[in-house]
Amino acid sequence: MFVSDDIRYIGVNDRQLDLFEGQYIVPEGMAYNSYVILDEKTAVMDSVDKGFTGEWLANISAVLNGREPDYLIVQHMEPDHSGSLLAFLNAHPSTVLVSSAKAFSMMKNFFGQEFTDRRIVVGDKDTLSLGKHTLTFITAPMVHWPEVIFTWDSTDHVLFSADAFGKFGALDAEDDDWACEARRYYFGIVGKYGMQVQAVLKKLAGLDIRVICPLHGPVLSENLSYYLDLYNTWSSYGTESEGIVICYTSVYGHTKEAAELLAKELEAKGCPKVAVNDLARCDMAEAVEDAFRYGKIVLATTTYNADIFPFMREFINHLTERNFRNRKVGLIENGTWAPMAAKVMKGMLEGCKDLAWADTVVRVTSALNDESRAQIASLADEMLA
Image: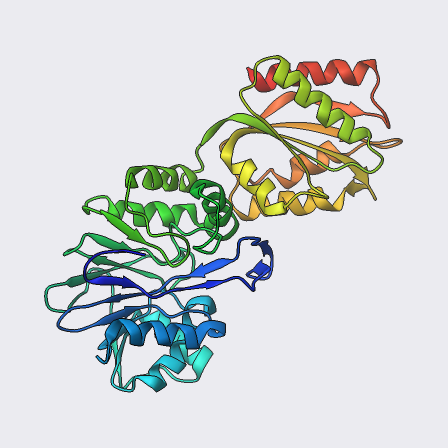
């Protein structure tokens, strides 16, 4: 993968992984990216997961062709990026580590030492000269760990962005839709930290960025405003796409029938996009992605043990954990003798900011009837207003 004449890609593809971070389905695997900057002094940008140490070290040797790396720059200490760090340092005893103070503290947790005899601690706007290339470090705390730094190469106009602008999928995957897996990645992993992402985007605003090198996913070198604009929308909890998402759980099929009837009503009345998710069967991360992609959402579930069905509770917890806000919300509840699902769902979301609630709450008492069908039609009108 070409970055620039002086910057070489040395990352690896993980096709063995089934769950990223133990929870996100990755049918197309994962890429762990790493780069080498060749200059009077050489710098390696981050390491890779420990399962690929040998391949990564071989990639470094092939690019350096006998030269010793002068620096290893550690932008992020998560194990998928720092897992091979100790093996690298053992293989290259003269290499100096460059990272944030918090990262070195984390190294003590992971490796039992902070490498005080071979390190440079950097903070915001600190620089490191490699010769022709001057690197400037940009602190990016909580994007999405507290120690994170970005690195700006002003010579080649390259931003090394740690986990930001990353996506699920190995680099030899056939999926060409960056936004789909980048969105699922962002809202699953970074979504809670919108305020922090906004802060770092402001730091980047004055830079002439021509290439973005993330730690996952492809190097981005064309139409960069597209990626930056999406990150701005996502991190400000704005609406990316016009449409309505319906998320439901159903025990015997009646709540599903209500959700599907609402979807048909919305489509018949001209809704540009209706996304429907069965929370018991869909990829939960994709449902979360949809909730943040569209500006309107309808939640439909049953009263269950004087509460709500477990998959809906889990889903709402995912939303509130990620600071769900700026959305219009409609509710459908089902119950045979004491319906209270709408009350529970609204209570769970009461801490979310800037939510607008539809006045119509659809109540299904066991199965759809004329009254609940009429309520669904009214809800559809409200959601489209």
